[in-house]
Length: 334
Image (cartoon, rainbow, N blue to C red):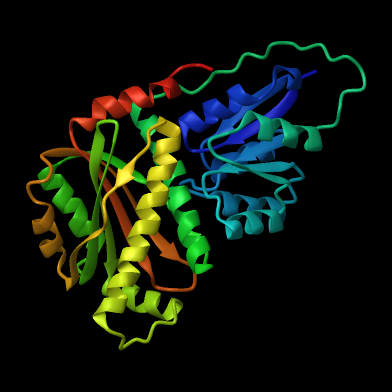
């Protein structure tokens, strides 16, 4: 007898990894959903014995999905599988009714431990009938989106722990830009506000680039309140705060990326591009660094504040084949 399972994740790679990680003994009959609204529709039409749920998704995220499942009285055990590993995120999903939380990338030992707790042991020998599952077809961008998702989750977790806050984690943007397109993207990030910008170079095994951290003036003001720094404090104290935020975000992102690519990254000291300046001034500081670049971009916001922090990773052209090679194992069946 098959065991009906629903896997809800916008990432094709994550859906495939989750499906491949389930033990054959479970005899899982797997359905896939690509976001919360899709999952709710399938839950209304089918009976599932277990659901695996991502948090960061379009249309309806995992938090909203759990809330709606509670309203509709869907009695399906939910295991959250996410790159958003903030303590407050875990607390929130458990309060919303999730039975367990597993960190991405999926660890089979952690998964098997959860399955032992949630799935009733079979009292009689189970005849395992192979179930035909149409696994997602992966594209190069799927790989980079999921790798970026895990990495920005590590960065959000570090920021959340440092300031004891909840950081809202949106979907990352992954693009390959010409330099003119990169400048347009930067202007969109700044939304015509005055900003403070910090840049950090990084490299590891031939993979190199620059990370850019942007904070609007209103964000800097709120960040100082959060840290109980006097509003009229010296520029030096504000600068130290900017450097701290940059080190936290860039370092934790690179650790997350390095673990997945099996690369040890080294980062240079943060360099101030300017405080309370226009985005055009930031752009002029990056002109000439890249002709074409792959970028990971995300905008973090902190719950209960107007703080918004934009994080942009730019990889030099020569790095892309090396990074492709390091991540090629994710394209393979396992």
